[in-house]
Image (tube, rainbow, N blue to C red; front, side, top):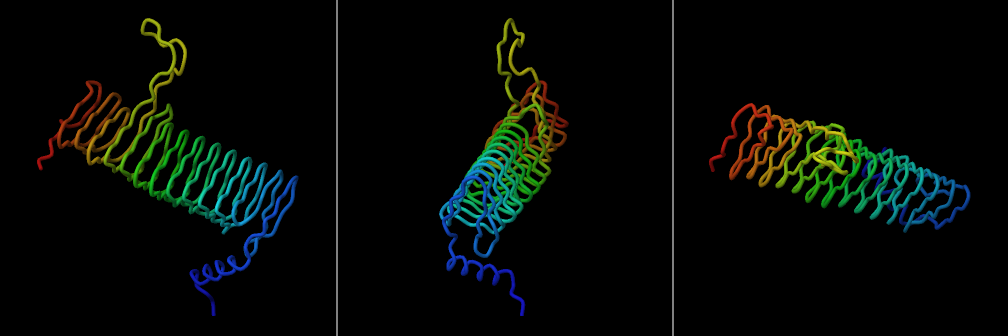
Length: 281
C-alpha cells in the first residue's frame, strides 16, 4: 500500500529526529551524506550540521534540507525545498523548490520557488517562481520578479524595478522606480501606497544637471490601486485609483476613475480620463 504525501513527510521527519545530520567540516572540496536526503557537495569550505549549514565557495545541497541556519557565500544550489529559521546568501543562489523561513537575506543573484516566512531582504536580482507570503516585511533593492502573488502583512519596500504577475497586498507599500519599467499584473491593495520616481542624484548648476544620473525614471504599469488611507503616485499608468487622501503626481496616466474619500490633488501634467470623484460615505 502506497503512503500519501503527508505520511511520507511524517516518516521522513521521524527518521530525521533519529538520524540527525552529523557535524562535518569540509576544507578544499568534498561531500558528506545527509541521512534520508542525499549528498552535500562543497568546493571551498563549509560546515554541515543540524544547527548550521555554512558554505563558502560553491556548494550543492539536496532538496528537503532543514537546519536552524543556512548561510552561503559564492555559488549555492539547493536541489529542492529548504527550511530554516534563518537564511543568508551572497553571490549566486538557486533554490529549485520552495522556501520556508523566518528571516532571509540575499545579495547578488537569487532565485527560488514559493517563499513563505516572516521577513525578507534582497539586493541585486531576486526571482521567485510562485507566491510570496510573509508575516512582517519585504525589502528589495534592485530587480524583483514574482510569478504569483506578493502578500506581506506589514510592509513592502522596493527601490529599482519589479514585475509581479499576480497582485500585491500589504499594509504599507513604498516603491522608488528606476529607469526600467515596472509591472503588476493585477492590482495593489494597501492601507498606504507611495510610488515615487527616482530623483536626480548629482550636481545642478543654473538649472542644468551636470553630473550624476541623467536618466528619466521608468513607469509602473498596474491595473488598479486601492488604499484605505493615503495614495501618492508618480510615473504610474493605471486604470483606477481609490483612496482616502489621493495625490496624482507627475508622469501619471489614469485611464479609468480617480475616487477619493477625503482629499485629492492632481498634478497639472498628469493625464486623467475623467474628473476625480468623491466617495460618499
